[in-house]
Length: 562
Image (tube, rainbow, N blue to C red; front, side, top):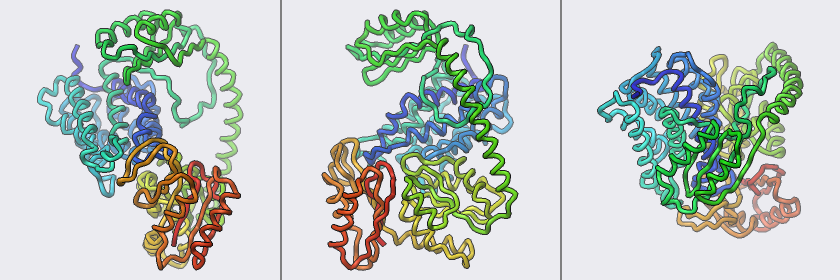
């Protein structure tokens, strides 16, 4: 029977399926980042974002579409991480705006909602760029608007996803940096992975991918549950490396699916890159393996007895829950006490990573630190919690990462009981400079203007290693190379940290420079730090050189020139 409308239960299933699908392809999306750095996290950020939306509508069955969509949009809004995650949350927010009080919507209303989604997302970005997730979303919306037979909702959505895939493939033609690196836009890829998962749910395909979801909540009091409801006791997983990918036709795929479904339930069946990933609950794991062997070699085989695991998890959860409940109670009491105290006039929030850098910000008088930054972008909800903890009339947020600014802005727009100011710091050194230049006697508006002007005078650099071969700005990069990344791109590539740092400084230091600040990472040993600082002092005797233990992961050295 042809589905002509979208209701709350189906929508909730599509959101959950989109999250599951992205969970499977998270690393693929991460690996598309233009810079081949070891902390590419677009997939992680988008997964955390969409999972927050899915978690908000878990098991929604009888609620109308407007209610389910609103809850999901709110969940994504709070859970949004990174620029792509924030844009994804804004797409869902715009989609929800157009639904209003609808219990269900048809193809025409979906097309209108897609258009509203794109308009909302574009407005959320200060300087929208084509060749990004925005371009892909716009193509999906345009396909919906142009599709003539909107009563055939399934065919319309299939067309939208196909057009989105084609738009994604064109992103390198719109952004030269993507073409040079040989990748498509990572945010756009993440969006399409989510949409493919959502489309599978719409078409009735059972998606229950086993992935590690971000920890967003704790169940305080798990109830005893019998294992009698577990019909198929063995969670069976494996990957088939296909002997002949071309011979694995759609008919063969359907035949294998049908066989596995005959063995059990909760089937996950993902085909791609010459492999088939299988997850199935069954009482006969051996038969599932035998079927896979008909098509190729097996790898990553795993069988778990769900009945035994179920009982063990319940016991462990009860112990953890008791401790967690006591911890939450103590925290709530402390927070209530803080709320009752008088508000400060001004407070600073800084995003940071590493004990050394955190200590620098504390010594400068920053009130609240958010652990995160480059290796895991904090969410909008993290920002809101920090604002509440700051407990001040005027709160200044230092994102210290270009991929955190949108989440900070989103949090600012949600707060009504204090004045929140986001200083657009893109690096740790810019954040330090902003705090140093705060003048208590100035008004908040004057301080925002002054700090923003001062951070423009800071030249920043970060030294890390490449995780893949690529080409950026005409520079050939090989996996394992040491890279020096500046405010506007790659500054140096070499075989060791000292040579890369010195090449970076050659490009950053000018006749107006007075100070070089070095923040050494946790993976750069103390003796090497001292030797490098001495080399720099010898080459630039007229400049002050400050060295600090940063403790940051992944980045051997973070530096600035002022």
